[in-house]
Image 1 (cartoon, rainbow, N blue to C red):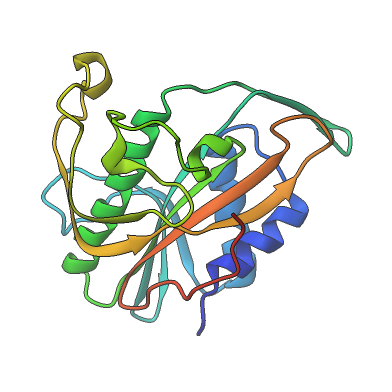
Image 2 (cartoon, rainbow, N blue to C red):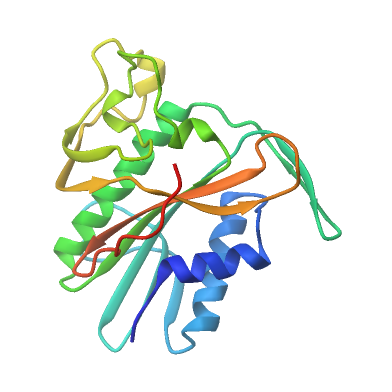
Length: 220
C-alpha cells in the first residue's frame, strides 16, 4: 500500500488552508490519513517503547507491519483571515532560530526511530507563512547558521549553535544535533489565504527511513 504524504497534504490544503494552532494541524492531518487509509491504526502523541529517551511522536500509524511516524511544526506570522465563515487570527511567532533547531532535532529523532524500528518511514514537516524560513538570509554569522532551512539548504553531520549564541537562545537546546544522512530542503506551496501580507503558506517535508520522500515540485 502506497502512502503519499505530499498528496495527502495537498488534499488537506483544499479543506483546511490554514490552522488555528499546531494541535489543530496535527488533528486535521491525522483525520485525513485515517480517511485515506482506514486500515491504519493512527495514534497521536505516541511514545515508542524502543527509544531510551522519553519521546512522544505527533502522529504514529501503521498496518500489517508497516510503520510510519510524523513530526510536525506549524510556525506563523501575523494573519487575520476568514475562511468561509470561520475567522482565523494567527499570532506573530518569533524565535525562528529556536524553531529551526527544533525542526532539525525532529529529523534526528526520526532517524533514531528508523534505526530502532527497521522498515519505519518517517517525516518531519514544517508548515509556515513566515517567508523567513524558506528565504536565504543575506546576513552572515547568524547564531543558527547550521540550522538554516531556506530553499536548497543542506543539513548533515553535526549541527550546533555558533559560539556567540546567547544562553537565553540555547537554554534547553544546548546539545548538538547529529544527523546520519544528508537532507536537502525543498519548499512546496501549501495554500494562499486572502490577499493580505503573510497569506502564503509553504511546507518543507523531509523523508527519513527505508522509503525516503520522492522529489516533488518546489517553489523558490
